[in-house]
Length: 290
Ligand SMILES: NC(=O)c1ccc[n+]([C@@H]2O[C@H](COP(=O)([O-])OP(=O)(O)OC[C@H]3O[C@@H](n4cnc5c(N)ncnc54)[C@H](OP(=O)(O)O)[C@@H]3O)[C@@H](O)[C@H]2O)c1
Image 1 (cartoon, rainbow, N blue to C red):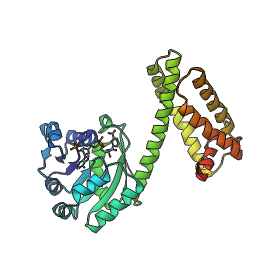
Image 2 (cartoon, rainbow, N blue to C red):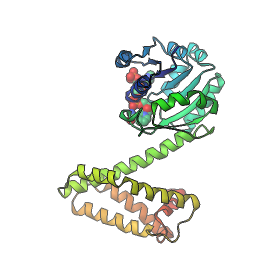
Image 3 (cartoon, rainbow, N blue to C red):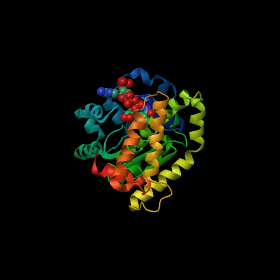
Image 4 (spheres, rainbow, N blue to C red):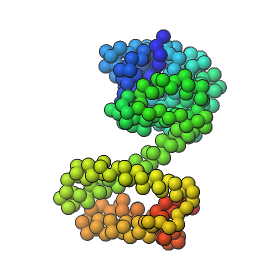
């Protein structure tokens, strides 16, 4: 028996299995394209000949593949599902909270202890302090897999029995990262238009990341408390700032899609009467729908 089986050897599955191996864990791997397992086998992983054999090999089975539907296609086969009974299944593929609830129901029907998780890092960060894994679902499953999860990521957080929590927070995180990246790419175009180095812009943002984090934390607290009064900055101020970014895009003849979207949203906040409130008040516009 190995301690853990990793099903799925895309960039992330390889990183997870690699981190486990380097921490000294006994690891079995399986991938649809078995050639991808070769470097891991060279590091000491056992290559299972089938999904069923991978599931039989360990009491904890980690799945990290493209999506949940592909997971069911792999695990649905009778010999696989019966081998999974009584074991812990940790689903680390990205999905929605509804996918997580469906996964938990699927596992329960088959007597499988289910944990749904998300990885807040890129493959090269796995096994290092800067990586995080968040999980939710069966507490018993978490206790049985905690040590293994801690070998895969620097920080492991259990969010409780509500199985969709990890996925919800993951999608909230992805939403933040994507919007931030889009802003960054537009910022890069501003730099290019003015002959500045985009690399320096990236470094500047990395340096001030803690200050940006503090702003976001303040906004989160304001939204949680519904307290938007007496702000040091306001929706009105953001709206004017976004208009200036939009004007610059037109002056420099660069694509204006991102500032046009941002200024449109802030303007809606002003028109809705939230101009004097803190920027987080924009959530009241989003709650009403676009
Ligand atoms: N990469 C990242 O930065 C990152 C970060 C956080 C979370 N994640 C999540 O981690 C999961 C895996 O990501 P990834 O980066 O490893 O790459 P990916 O492209 O999302 O997944 C590749 C893996 O899925 C397998 N796969 C796809 N369709 C399949 C099917 N129908 N049947 C069996 N296996 C199938 C591939 O097998 P083959 O090798 O045979 O094609 C490979 O093992 C995803 O849900 C992703 O969102 C990734």
